[in-house]
Length: 308
Ligand SMILES: [Zn+2]
Image (tube, rainbow, N blue to C red; front, side, top):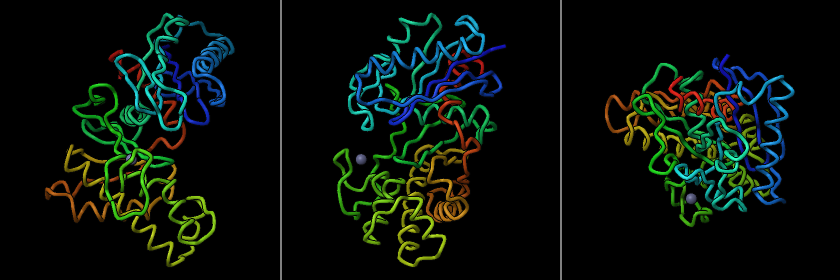
């Protein structure tokens, strides 16, 4: 049986799992991503958790084909570094692959978490039949992964897909963390929806609260959310005009709002994508609601060993 270890490093928690070649998670665990310790110590904790997970499942390192690590970007994939993710402020040029290599003899691969998720969708999700598609995650931030010509497109150093920082609506008050105005994630992420709802209603609201008010038909919230859906449509049109994907898959917490989002975004695409055929591009939900990051991290192993 072929097995891979997947590690999905997030800003608050890190998921670790043993995944088989059919995409089944045989065993998994989660540990907090402790931002109060230095990254090298946190990576040691991750490594220790992998070893415990293997032992608990009666496995040895020789039973696994490799280890895939998904992490928030920016990264330097060529050199195995986590460069400077905004939600992991201490993690500046951290040689995560090198540290794993000192503890394991199997190969280790690093990729941007949205890229890993795209690989998971290609493997066992919404993209199994496609050679060209884009995966977009809309949650705290916005990111994308691209499968082009059947392969993950990473860019020169692994940072292709940072679409959260393409400007889509500079009319929105305020400035993104990156310094630009109107960034996609500044105007359409879950964080943005919570911020815009809070400003509108004059009381603290989460994105879940905002969608509850939307479902109740609150008129102010409804028009704000429709504007957000329109901006997501703009993001999709830009991807369609740039890459000509067969379709776009959207995952992440905001996609759980469901039909209303997909209807609005598909409507926008059908009007504004440039080419007539581009206007027929469908925007569809992820098929891997849970554990996409973890499955994607493991999928990096199969992808890089030519078994995908
Ligand atoms: Zn930005």
